[in-house]
Image 1 (cartoon, one colour):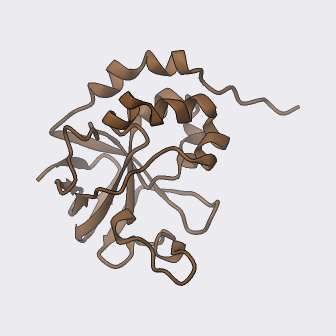
Image 2 (cartoon, one colour; image 1 turned 60 degrees about the horizontal axis):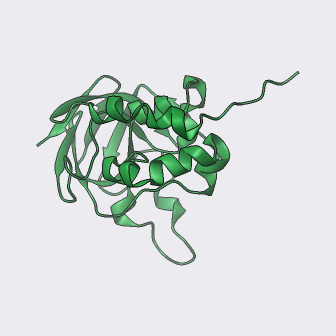
Length: 183
């Protein structure tokens, strides 16, 4: 007998907004690192190397270019607020399905991290880019329609609940528990 996944309702998710918005604004922590070696594959890492050319080494970002186009340089890395993910999905075993590489306890809102903001991420430095990161069909399939409505709502977009895009500006290693902070 297989257990059915119960997606959280929008009202339940909305109750978590204050907790998510209270994430640290200046310095937080790296809670989860996930490498995507191939489409549909996930591998949790204790540490990952960030490269100017490859983003997260071993991740398939660079190979994800579309039809004779290179992978988008401003979408090299995806970061998601861990509080938002935990609100959406209570089962930690399913967290890597969100599809991001770095899950952080850090306020990712536009107000706190406008495009161009540089962040230390472990030994590396990354830069927040302007490319939006919104809930899509895959996210809906994995976490439900209300989860997409939550992250794509006005409040969700302001807090970047689905996450942010970034690019590597200084290579280095990132470990679980490392600091993420404004540079």
